[in-house]
Image (cartoon, rainbow, N blue to C red):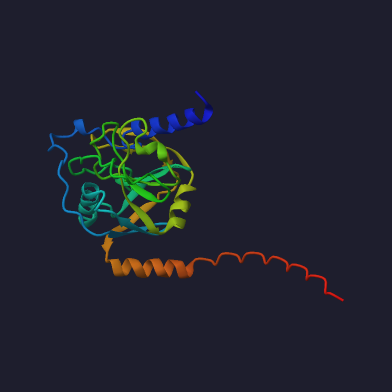
Length: 250
């Protein structure tokens, strides 16, 4: 096996085997729950969510047309205030930033029942997209999500069920890049069974989702325009020297 292949395999093993991208307790240890939803709600237009974090604001554009189950699930947590004051508990540089499951003390929060995996919806794990975190079994996603720090085609299902993408960042890519550069180390957390465990890839500083809220398309459009206006202008292309004039006839 080549070195690049071994690296991808190692990242995939970490993604799937460390409890829903590191810290999600197995669902079978929880009380009996309803089976994952098998039918999707009616498709709608884009849904916009503001994630106010301790490093800046991220605006997400969610795609209920292609990922109706995942979007509906995510929005239930948003509207319930579930994500407010939760930590980004796992960061793997040049791979993913994960959150949506643990409070500031790294205690895992109780969740709703798991949902069906929509990994075949055609959306890809490209840089800046948001996807559902899950256990190794495909239909086990609950509240946790991850943001892709780069294009991650290995998560799209080449070697089995992939990870369901359900939206993308439209404002705040700089915030994502800042999150991706935070140093990490092993740290103790508490899973849903109340068991204290050591987890890897935990940020050495507590990075929080202060508040997650739905915003209107108009508000999102304004934030997009404001972000474009605030972005530094691209450097001007160098001007090519003028071609020498043809010799004049005499």
